[in-house]
Amino acid sequence: MERTLTIDEAKAVPLEVLLKQVASTHEAIRIVLDDKDEVDITPTPTLKPLITFEGYVPDGWKDAIYEPKR
Image (cartoon, rainbow, N blue to C red; front, side, top):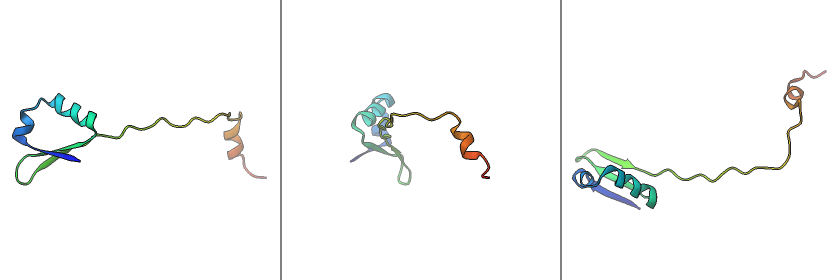
């Protein structure tokens, strides 16, 4: 869902409060500047950590890939 505020409504709220609302609710806010212009403040998704695999990389692996074929 997205909230829409006029520029006057947005001015009444401190910027820090507005940004914290976007971050905590994960909902975008659209600010209407005038009849033509609008600004969207959209949260970014939180990424999950990458999976780690057990194992190892053998020494010299890179050299083995680039050795010329005989």
